Image (tube, rainbow, N blue to C red; front, top):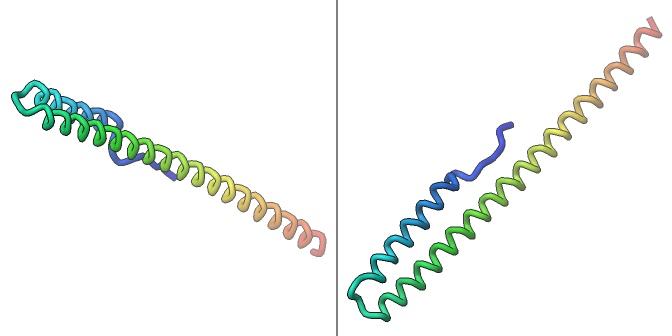
Length: 98
């Protein structure tokens, strides 16, 4: 099975955060009132932190899914081995009775 990966590449997340910070920088350099600048800076910080948290959560989820897939793959291999062993035993018994 193919490993699971988050849909967005990490570099895209960095670009989104960089874009938000660039907008915030322009706002901070503008002639807007300080209260507006402070509010925009706080909103930018909250947004960038939330984006980073969501990305980390997506990565953790992908890792957990990949671990489950690996365990399922091992279980499939174990079942195949058990079936082959059972079939070999049955064939061995059949050849003894022939």
